[in-house]
Image (cartoon, rainbow, N blue to C red; front, side, top):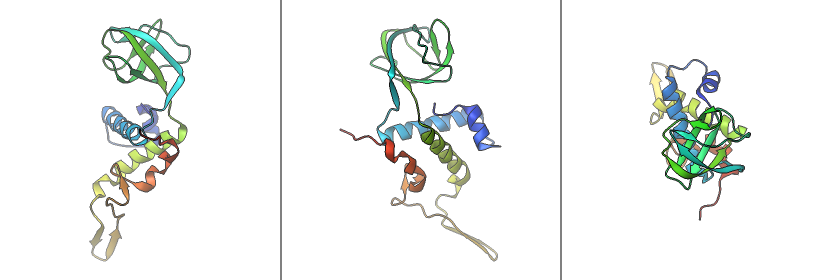
Length: 173
């Protein structure tokens, strides 16, 4: 995951969402960003093959820590997994099926991508309910909101909030 829930709570301050809800929202933002940029943010220098059984990878790497994100490919276990425990093996959150060979790669997000994702979530929390309302008048008080249409939104967010992704977009073939 791009940022863990405890750090996210510190960034957001007092929000009424549960930990599981915040985690789900960040996973959705992560998936959208990976899809939009066509970038897996893999650190290919930390890549290895490992067998899996009983929700753990039967391997060890000194370059991995609890909380790191791993991407497994070339296996039945395709997907992103967060490390929950490291001992003589690597235990991951989620379901890992028994497999003789998993290609495991560490995923690392740059600091500006992490900060951008937090800003997207802040915008989502503060402004998502105002989408579709262009102006509001109560007595003598008038408020005009940002107009959201196809020309200035992307993935449901204002284009201005997604500028941080420009350097990370990879060509699609």
